[in-house]
Length: 456
Image 1 (cartoon, one colour):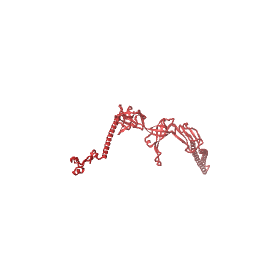
Image 2 (cartoon, rainbow, N blue to C red):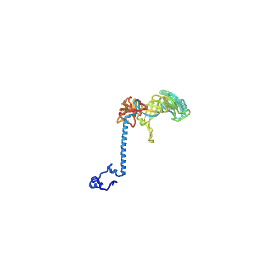
Image 3 (cartoon, rainbow, N blue to C red):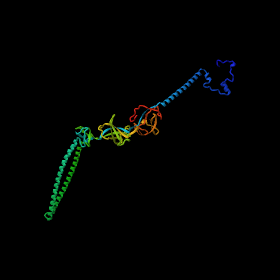
Image 4 (cartoon, rainbow, N blue to C red):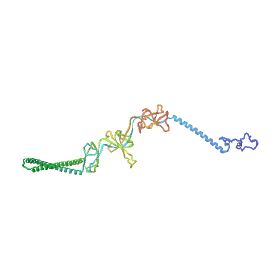
């Protein structure tokens, strides 16, 4: 009951204006009404209800204010983006030489470079050349000494003299036997005449015939001995020639016009068989021995051009070509599965450099494909849309436009442009990541530090 209510009957409201209680409504068959947000009963239920109503009004007002400010800021941002130009880096396509290559490292050697070996256990008698000296083919480089070989040679020479004396004696014996046969034949002829005249008996004639046959047999024996002595002499001569050839090997000579690269021995030094003596090479040829990984070796073939450079900055380049590639890879084994198998290859310079040092390390660039005077752009300027390539260019009104292009050789540095651009076109190389390009968007060129091969 409200404070100003009075029990006087005059203040009792009319039954038609009084709302029935829920229990009465239920008894009358009607449902009670649901209280609304602004139902007076909610506001009339005390101080707590009033606080809840005020809080609802504050939250609703804050939401309306937030939506209004956000919409205004979004509109301003959209308006600014549609008016402010996008700052981009631009450049023009340039003419350049594009290439794909394989890089390797190698060691410089001279043509036909080889290390001469000792023919046996020898002593160095004399060294007749110096390192870096150029020598002609056939020049004696070293003289070696083999005492055992010298002894064998002396024995062979003595044996030759003995065999010559024996042969001379066999010749004399053969001549003597021939004279005996001649006399026996003459005597037999005389005996035949005397036998026919009856002066001698047939037994005497038979004795002379037997003497002739015996002399002839001894003559044949002497002939055989002479032939044997000839064979012995030939055999000894062959051994002597072999010893002399081995001695000749002890005079180490240059097999071709060469330069002496290294001398491994000194006079008086003993060297084992097949020991290193000295190294020579052909100074008119310079080659590089290098190794390739198997994946790279599959791309390389004989006669591909190469560039050779000494390791380090700003070094001269020396052109050449690949002359050989090994048919198999070496280096990997079941015992070390992590080892990298490599393929050996050799490149030869087109002409001697006069500067590369044999044994020095160099870098080798094998040129797989080359496009001289190609119109090129950096790879990041090329974009893809499906299977088609395109670039963004700046038109005469300073706006970005999409331009389809046809690309060719793709290298690490740049991409060849076959069609779609000219050297005078202005291409957008880089754009801000937060401002995607759209056709017709106004752009502004930044101050680029253009990459090599481009005209900013």
